[in-house]
Image (spheres, one colour):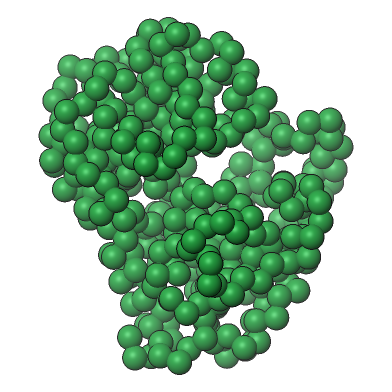
Length: 372
């Protein structure tokens, strides 16, 4: 990678608050570009050793109480925040984004690349869904009044910002298609990966099903609770989200459903290995967690749409349910229990998503674009 020597690199993120799959991608980008500086609207991972020696530049939103902890409330400020960053000293700028970090402005001879997790959901593909499930409490009525009046202008701005990067990378073929539809840009697909060394094959499974994610409406926790309340089968739900939705769903969960809140990462990895199957009920552009389960030899029962179709191999690493309903899921689970899956084969398949492959592809992409 001779062309990358002596190149000053910046990695720009929408925000760095929790630690989920977008942050895993960030970590792998930092491994690929170990000298890179970080720019973000808000940084709340001060105790994370990954960032201890990094140069991190935050926006003015970091200093605003309440807004610095709610990316939804700060929605209309983030475009200003990212445009305010001075990136004139950098040769390569990579935005890792599902929102506004692609809005940064770079010098003419800077190579600007957007690693896109999805075009901004709340402007485009999921606008009406977000409008119906706003989580602002007493301020919901304000945003439901304002958002329809603002969204046209916000979409126009977002489209214009999407013309700034020189090149796009998509995290999946589904995201690639959305980038072309909403932004009229071509993108190359480089899927996120996992650190396969963190996961061990476990062939002896226990009799429970597992789901791990943030408890927000489109992640379909409600679908799982409804399905397992009907079936009576054992379900373990892991989340770090303590909100009204989580409390309401826990209150109606049967004795067969166990909620685990804010448990250590090591315990989650153990659950990946022990679970009979990992459940994947939402529509997702890309989601790295089922790959982690497969790295432990655990099959996936997924809603057969979008990302799942790109990474779950039906009958080999998991099965699909075709309708996003509790009855369809329960029928799939019944079919699953009559089947046999080879944990070693599932693990072998997951090894094709090792982070070293991701880093190699990213570095090759950047070097090729520098040559161009």
